[in-house]
Image 1: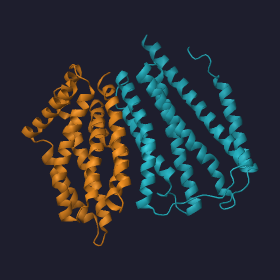
Image 2: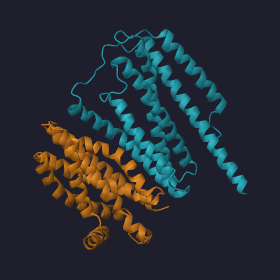
Image 3: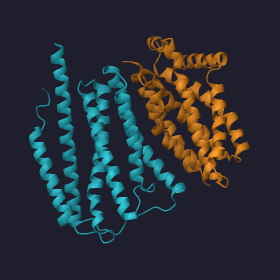
Image 4: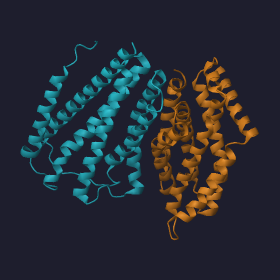
Length: 212
Length: 226
C-alpha cells in the first residue's frame, strides 16, 4: 500500500506544520465566532430560527474558504509543489493528503463553532450535524482542488472564492435542506452523491492541474 | 489545413440566416396563440431553443476539453474555449429571455422559482470564473490543462446543480408552477423544431467565425515573430 503511505506522510506533514506554526486553525476559529456575532446583528429581532440555520451554512462556507486560501501557501512559498510533483508518487496523493488535512482543520473549527452556534442561536438537530459532516467532505475535496488551481494563477487568492462558490452552491442547498426540513434523508443522500461524484472527478483530474 | 470535410463558412452563414428568418416567420405568423398565455408565450420558442443550444455548447466545450487531455489534440484547447464562450453568450440570452417572460407572466424580472433560470445563473457564475481562470494563467500547456479540467467540471456541475435546485424548491418555494394542457403538435411543433435548428446552426456559425478569427490571429502572431 505505497499510495496510502504517501498520503499518510503528506497529510502528517501538513498537520505537523499546523501544530507547530498554528497559522490556520486559530484564525478560522476566531473568524467563525466573529461571523456569528455579525449574524446576530444582521438578523433583526423576531427573525425565524430557519434564517439562523441558513446563516450557519454561510459561516461554514466562508470559514472553509479562509482555510482553503491558506492550504497551498506553504507549498508555494518554498516551491515545495515542484518537488512533490517530481517525487515518484501518484500526483493524486498530493490532493488526497491535502484534502484530509483541510478536512481535519475544518472539522476542528466546527467542533468549536457548532456548540457556539447552539449557544448563540438555537439547538442543532442530528441531521444538521450529519449534513455538516457530509458537506465538509465535499467542501474539502473540491476546495483543495480549486485551491491548487488558484495558486498557479496570477490572481491567486482572488480567484479561489470565484471558482469555489458556484461549485459550493449544491452543497449549501443540500446542507440547508438537511437542516430545515423534517425528512432530511433526501438531502443527506444528495450530499453523499455530490461528495462521491466530485471526489472522483478531482482525484482523476488533479494530475493535470500540477503537471504541464 | 485539416478538416477539409467541414462545411464552408459562407454556406453555414446563409443556412443560419435562412433558418432564423424561417423561424421568425413561423413563430410570429404561423404558430397559434397559446390558450392561457396568449402572444407572450411565443418567446418560449426562442427561450427553450437557446437554452438547449447553450447546453450543447457547454457539452461540446467539455468534449473538446476531454480530447485535449486525452489525445492532446493540438486545436482542442482553443475549440473548447470558443465553445464555452458561445455557451456563455447563449446562456446570457437564456437569462435575458427568461427574465422578459417572467416579467410579462408574473410581473417580476426575476423569479427564484424558475429552475431553469436559477440553473443558468449558477452556470453563468461558474463559467464567468472559467474565463477569469483562463486569463489569469499565461498561454501554454498549463493554461490548456486548467481550462480543460474546468470545462469538464462544468458538465458535472450541470446535472448536480439541476438536482440541487429541484431539491431546493421543497424548502424555498413550496409552490411549483406547472404548465400543462398545451397540445404539443402541428404548427407549434414545426415552429419549435425550426427555431431550434435555427439557433443551433446560428451558434455553430458563430463558433466557426470566432474560431477562424482566433486561429488567424494566432497565425499572424507567429508570422510576426518569425
